[in-house]
Length: 115
Picture 1 (cartoon, rainbow, N blue to C red):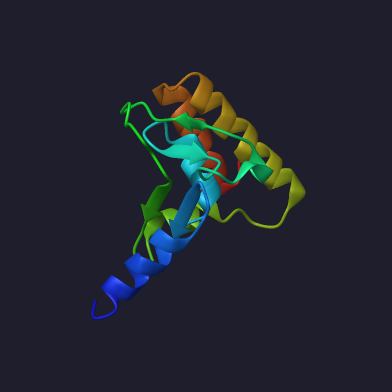
Picture 2 (cartoon, rainbow, N blue to C red):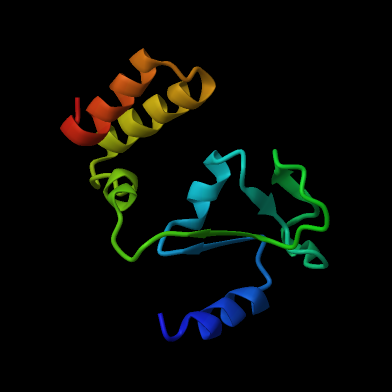
């Protein structure tokens, strides 16, 4: 877009360890490729980074971008029901700990069908 350079500069100036553009920054925590942690020199939230399976040197922050409307937004927005939220996040944790087709199917059924 026409404002891409300005947006890139704003993101570069942010002193956060993770920046999400049109996506929840906490989504970065579930991606081992992403780097997340404290911004260098900003010790209020800790020191160092986690993730970084790419073994990048001298990392300042992780930036995750998505289009303004993307299919994942629906997946990450859980209905306000406490019971459904608990079911989705429990199955998400099971899938992250043991990624297989059965756990993925259970996760998707909780996300899309609420069962």
